[in-house]
Length: 104
Image (cartoon, rainbow, N blue to C red):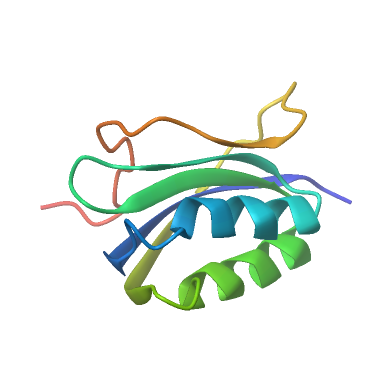
């Protein structure tokens, strides 16, 4: 299977509701690699890597989120796969690195 990598950014009520832990649990359950974190602008973002079908299932789960979350928008962007990751990590809060496809 071909490995694929996707960056994602989740908008809505996604901080303070266990969203990062939920994301890590979903990714680990699917044996996906990557990372997630809160952003200073109130979103959750990350990158996930694995086969296309498994990433699709993962994205469907995080589009719903944990029970207390309210997802209003899920952005995604395809990326080049990375070598050397061995797990899915929760990282410290930081500035968003997600670049939307829309320009202008």
